[in-house]
Length: 113
Image (cartoon, rainbow, N blue to C red):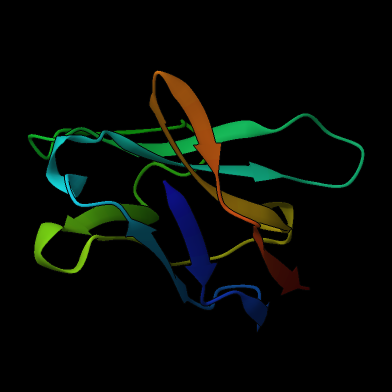
């Protein structure tokens, strides 16, 4: 499984960004998918998850601001990030697990004051 993220960048506080993660796998619909992030000097943390049935879960820090979604026809998940804060600055990683963990290369999100 190969995961390729895109959509990161620099945005002012209060702004929005949308991330995408494309998966190269033929049975994408059976995979639960996640977004993680890692800020400088901090541990990688789970941001949002979406199960194969579309059930979503969020970290408390992003509830009400971030939305995870998936399009099985495109083998892609998305993370819509609104009302961004400087503390959201991190490298964002796409992740899935089946027998083993798979990670994307990460995409940088920087939120300025």
